[in-house]
Image 1: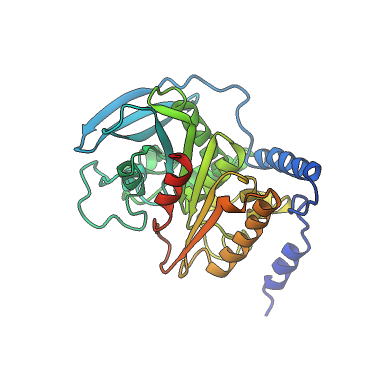
Image 2: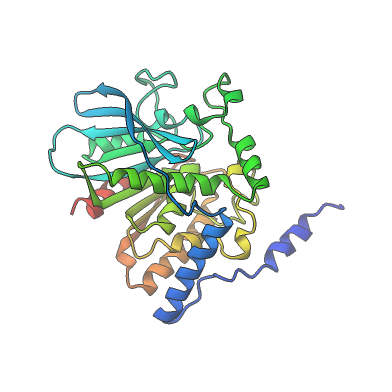
Length: 341
């Protein structure tokens, strides 16, 4: 009876995002794009002015019939190492197109490369992420799966003895918020540094780098691709929506939240920064935390930005019969189309 429901609704409705896409000519478009990228970077917490040395090192290798699996480590910033898996197909000596695979909530990068939490081969049901990094490697891509901050081997020391699926998201996120930074911002910067690392490899075609992510990894994929044009094609699975209908209306991990962002733009505007580069939106029609009707509305708005740039052939959707999970029905062929041509 005395709840704040109406107040919160009115608060959102009275907010008029400055960078709501509404442009008529290219000069306005460039002002919109550049202005939104600048403010988006700022509300994410900003990025270091000077990039530290990567100092890449291989810590483990495992040989499989069709690919080589490397465990590598490189530095995002001082005292911030990133462990990652690299899956390199064996059949080609040429420079390969590369995909950054961004995992969602779970036990980290092992979950998408076909491993159990203890590093042994996962021969059972792969779960909602369906080993998509491994599937990409089987299609001939060099794949790198960085461990997102707060998961797996990048949990806080106090959380290392907890169950593998328990993350350090809450503690790290709230710590960062008190310092004016965000978990989303650090994960995006880690992914930018992952691109920097790929550029150092002599087996990667740096002009054919893609990104694919699901759930929280979909956030990382979408946000990074919006800001870094070195990513030439992207697949966002189980994330595209509006902030209002997803993270602001349904319980989500605190790592999804970026203070003040909706004052500047809604999610479709952010993802519209990817245009005119190829983008596939994948979402289950029964996803309980990213409702499909809001996903469809968000997709329609992003598509309008592509249409404005006469790039409607570079955006597509896969609204499949499923829940919060990878589909892959269109995804792998989409990356083949745009990165192997």
